[in-house]
Amino acid sequence: MHFAPLPYLDPGSGSFLIQLAIAALLGLGIAFRASWTKIKGWFGVKPKPTEDDDESENK
Image 1 (tube, rainbow, N blue to C red):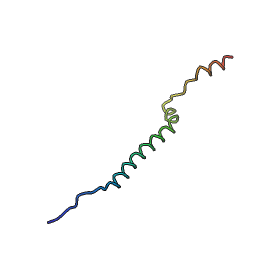
Image 2 (cartoon, one colour):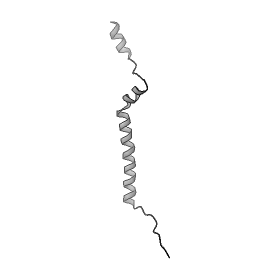
Image 3 (cartoon, rainbow, N blue to C red):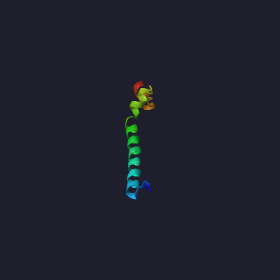
Image 4 (cartoon, helix red, strand yellow):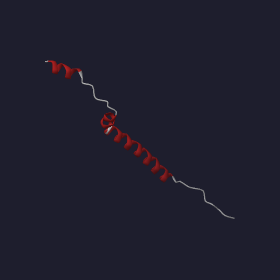
């Protein structure tokens, strides 16, 4: 008779994997936010001038 042990994940390992997944998601979010202006530049989106800028140019 051949016995195959069932896979076992102890609570410490499970907690570590959850922390790893959360850290990866937050890291991706921060990287995305930091490069948002570059991403918008790829699609040709340019920031609109504010009303204060227009008034200062006319004077």
